[in-house]
Length: 550
Image (cartoon, rainbow, N blue to C red):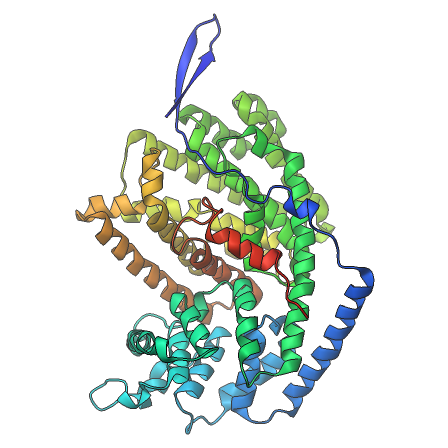
């Protein structure tokens, strides 16, 4: 706890006891301001021209390939290498062929690959297609045990399962055991691929980081297509150049805002916020959206730390009421040290509105309402903490799935989009659809599992770990295991909704799915956002610093 004196009218002093938290300083500082030289114009023009030539060759591959298995391998390679946004028409046509194909004679690798590709794109395919790989006792055939390629294909396919698809649960258990058993005997690049996906299955991997790690694996594959490999490297480097420019722009904005300097109790993580958003959507058409969302999430992070780490109950109430009013005059009612933050929050949202076209400006009130809701949830948690109240897991999640910020981040991510983000899409987000709730629950539970002990050291509100322990009389270890089961259930809800959701464009669904994937990247072992000088630093470097030699 930190003690601070406040001088009252009449000269008396009141001692304020504040919560305390000590975070490491910014890892990246002005790195992207100092080290973000644009690609030389001549080089960039050559790269763009070469990309167009290679794209045409890949389109020809789609036209020339008649074998369904080869089409599946082509689509899969293009997606794993992050090139699918260039070939949306071709992939859509290929998926129809794949769906209608006669697969009677396909083996484990082919059946599993087809199942995964179709489910990834919202096609429902029954898991009964795997029954033929079981014996009359309902066990997977022992003949499959040595088929590493087929087992890996089934392993990755099975993670797209929904509730009651027991055969897919069995497939995960079976393939994981077999792959772990044979890992030491496999050769590269298959060994690298198996190790990568045993750590985190393909369906749950952050896409941009997956691309960065898969290109070297693909390069080692003797069956690779060199045209696709060259295109993947050029495309990654070109996009990285754009991402670095965006990171520079956001860092300059953050420095000008100067909130990190005045709020020493808050996490200074603007580059990490940007990286988080790149994992949601990395394609060039989302540049404006990425910048807007990165600014929004950076302010939400500061807001979280105000409520979580510093403000008193009364100060939290005054800030919540001011945010609810959302008008500059309300600044007179917030504590002195929060006035600057409050006005900059309002001003930044006004800047967002100014960036939008006239027919897009209706989006801003939706974002404002989400930020108001986030503030109310933060305040509820402050009240719980002050009272020492430990809610049940269900009651906890009624508030804390929203206090993850995921509903607000999702809304913010749609604000800057040019296509697909219709008024109906904003109404849909505001209704808190099941897919958004499932993604937020994954975030909340994974965050609590990894950061529980650290947060309790600083008098934090009870986490879902503590709620579970109190409600069911268990220890920390059991509580964490039970919450991991809840995470698995939430993933199945998410998969189910991905097959059902037709109210909004697929690109909007993908953003929510990518938010869930980000947790596997950021919160799998530790709170990588708070402790960003560890694993997350390496990941930021892979995506934003290290280019591929061509």
